[in-house]
Length: 335
Image (cartoon, rainbow, N blue to C red; front, side):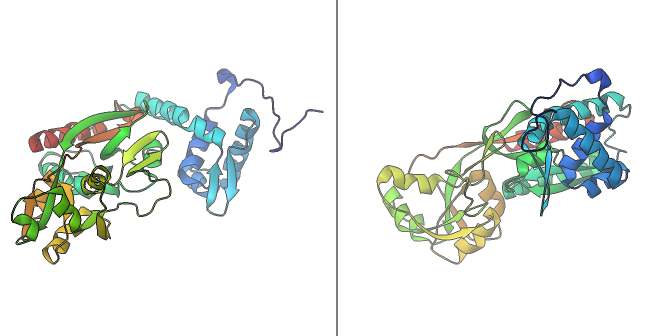
């Protein structure tokens, strides 16, 4: 009698030989991974739930792992399933591309591109992209997924998002990346604010109350504005200039207001004596309806690099290649 581990599967599994492996099982694995549900996966594949359950049972026996654990919110992938995910999805997408004979024609091809973007990209890049689509790709639609989502990288891994625009410190090899812009910071205050008169010093700035953007609230795994997720380290809170100054000057800045978007800042500044640290290009777009004054900060501020990243399995896809080209072209005009 064979010994079995606590999960009910044999601890030592024979190596899987590809020539005898049913590749349809990988389609079932990918569908459950995306849907987190046997029933939803069956609908996605056009199979019965029973057929999907039987296929999952076969795959579990072959790989010697539970792969998915049923929970209240759906099927949670095991560590082994998450380990398999990138290679399986890359292989399946490669097969799809190899079998696909159609090309992307922006003038005729109906397609929806899903783009992960914050209010920064939604203000500066997305409007200009949509303007181009009206002429160059009338059948193409854009759906923006908030880039502040804590599962943004998983969305890219699972193919739910075609491309994400943000600021990254670390990006694994499974993603391609494209530099779009170098962004710097300025201070913004209302017209007539005391800081707009006389010599601007760090001490004067730090005496004021500040309004800051906090994209994800008090996320437990947020470290100095960076969110680590599946090998990616991405910045989800970029207005750090004023917050970093007190560390150097030995003072404390009062955070008088926290808002979820830079778009919230101009009307707050116009009605208060608060000050905000904002991306230079962004405040130029947002401030025109308001009486806002832009000031150069009296201390060094670190610039950030705005990038686009995408999963490498879509590297050769003509549609996403076309999309990246146009986003890069738009960013080049803004430099």
